[in-house]
Length: 542
Image 1 (spheres, rainbow, N blue to C red):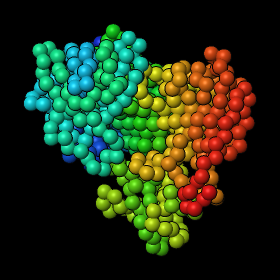
Image 2 (tube, helix red, strand yellow):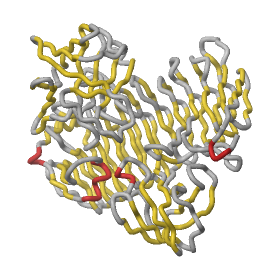
Image 3 (cartoon, one colour):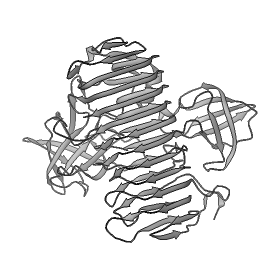
Image 4 (cartoon, rainbow, N blue to C red):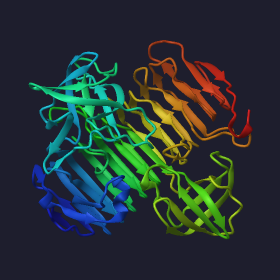
């Protein structure tokens, strides 16, 4: 069945909708007010689960919305798309923007040891009250720039390339979240004619004729948020300006992004296209395919596909009382009945046992009771738990990554294939057991026929997970084949086994060196392999 799409329409299953307008202006009165504690997953520290949604799909199947190239303009704090417990959903042929970008850009015209002079972007309305900067838009203003600290990033206005990143807060009193383990620059502001003086100790990366971008609206909203959904596709979907995550998927099975675009042209209000990650995925299963897409102007990660570790609190019978290890509250509800989980000794990859989750009871913001399929072994307090089910196979083809200060985070146990891409950004194989507790390790990665542009564009193996004699490596089976690099150090990292580096070239004709610390087998040609062995004191292992 085909139907014309209209603002406020009630969507029906088994229907293809088509748009007839070139622009849709969306106001709060055009939205659905949603109250659901499950959506705290997307709102982080928000005080209430209420928010305004333009297109809400809940418990629907087989819906396609073809916007025919239309631009969707959000006036105020609005969630463009929310997809909950749906199946076979396609969104295509649209651009999404906000009437006032949910971040602020300003050209730095002067720098002294005491201040930086800012000329605000005309699209970024702000006022100065006392020593505070107050960004505002339709139906909202932000008086919390003096709290905790947010990204302050630098960009070249000509090339749009990222050229520096710091964290900052503006105004007094400066309210620092003591659990936030990062250094924050504290500023005040003063109006000076048509410009604003950013006063304080000015970081060296703040230079004249650079653009300062401030991500002040956090991650309360996203462009597309999907939860507990199967088979989601975005085709020819562009973000002109977006708040929070571009695509935020939570416990979703099978995702396709084809011509997902964050790029810049005469329609773009700012250099920045999106206020946080372009793609952020919690607990995805099945297949995640990203094809023919452009990732530029992200304030944070271009791609972050991960699950989360939990930890053991205590055990009894066939019950594991588990704790949310991550600082992120959205990690609390990530695990599902039917998940296969592994338990590791401490913060290591020494696997002790596997179970299937048969029931979950959420006790509070941190504690959950997992009933599993057999009697539980004598796990210790702090042993890590990982969902093996919530690790997807990822294919990334014919994509471009650049114009940002960020990177791609590769964190899935599934099969990872990246081919025929171009990147100015580094690929990070990460593992975290200290703050975010994002899992899991790479176990099968192929990067082939890609072009890495610039000195930052390399592949790095990183891990904060402890190593032992029984589990001396975190990542494994990494194949880097037939790529072009400009950097002389295309691979840097540690505690990875099964590295293959074949057929790669340096486009500048420079010798290449792999710098590897405490790594296992390496099969490489056309480069020098520099091995380093550091003392590994974790759990008494040397």
